[in-house]
Picture 1 (tube, rainbow, N blue to C red):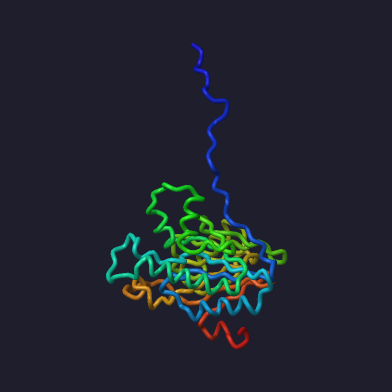
Picture 2 (tube, rainbow, N blue to C red):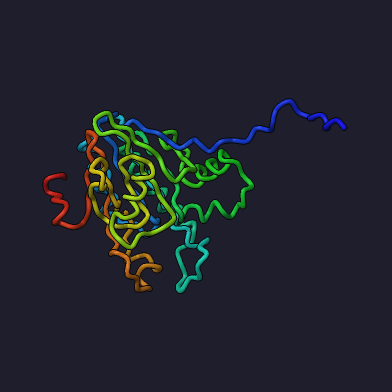
Length: 265
């Protein structure tokens, strides 16, 4: 008995998920990296310093990466709230304010999502394509052409002098400073900058080749109910941001032993 004849000459085409952003880290002298605004629980003084560092140390086009959790999305949290959270509209307005202030300094802003941003996207249960979800994000925040959105919670910055830097916003935490960054650096064979945990630390991978960074948050963690109304053994959360300048990473925090602001601004 002959096998049935195939109805199609070729198999159906399925999209590949390989569209994460890749940036030139040397253009304009470098790039500023900030994450975890958790709008509206943002530390606005530190957010202003993001603009200050960009204005003083970058050349045009000045660029900023927002590395996840721009929104807190408390209204769509899977966890039961102990106290009434700010509305999603208040979060959106705070995020719009931050982006508007930064666009007065930066010529390009690239935004990747974090686990809190995904709370909102998951409401649609896969009803929209990648482009459709980006259109929703753009409509929520700004349609300014200087702002670019990605649905990938990671991107790559390539520097001629120091090589590849991967910035990724995972959904998991580590109990030990730099432990997750080191594992991810091993996996991706690159320097690794890790937001999400709200830690502040820099180090060298065990192989001596890669820089690893725990990127602090732009959030004021005293405004985050899920942080302040619980006791955990994780390292303490820190406020700050980072920058790759001429291929080298710099960490900016409120800790005066790490950052002498009088030398920078």
